[in-house]
Image (cartoon, rainbow, N blue to C red):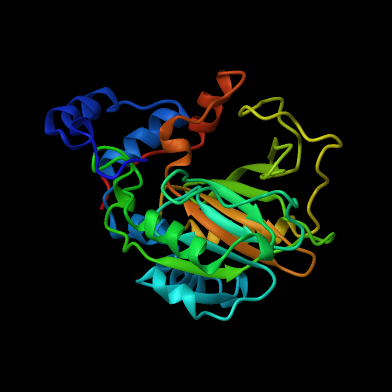
Length: 297
């Protein structure tokens, strides 16, 4: 994360070098980098934009799969007068991995980091964050270029830098639900990643579409006990495949709530092309399902 892209991420020579190095991709990470450099369709900008993607989701699967929108502002000062419930989420529209989650279930000592010092997740109680802190953090977000420039995750660059406020989603216990990340290759979901404990005690598990646990790790430990098969697994897969039908690959991030399925994000570049795979052979296994086009149109 930086205010402007480095010379390397703006250099034509660097771009040409990367194009040559990625011309015959085999593994998943190689194909993500191939896509980052070659796929410049407007669709990817829509996926990257947390506001515009709502219209796409509505068109493809319906507005019922979206979290409730509380506010959308070009100027963070709009947060000053927005009526806010007890639980809500504030995040920038032009990046990933940053948000402020506000709910009574947050740790008592949790605070929002000082504006300008943090691009990441915060979970705080309603009485632990002021409007001024929300506005200052949103102003900081608006100064940041996400994605490292045109030679990396270029799709975030054209996204308008706005701030969006949505309902906070909760699981059956009233806590923050697990993230389910569905990997869809050429229209078919092949793998599902489930992340728990985003704000502490993080876990991560991978399954195939039959809900068979994969003996692989992306870094965090497995959950104990193992996550059960979602009741709406068929619906999760159907929604993900519908949202992915216009592209060769996208990771569709969903939430499986007690009463519905909700779309979180559509991610074209997981980990910016640096996803860890342990054991390493799973990098090739994931890549085996993905046929990249010779040219994107």
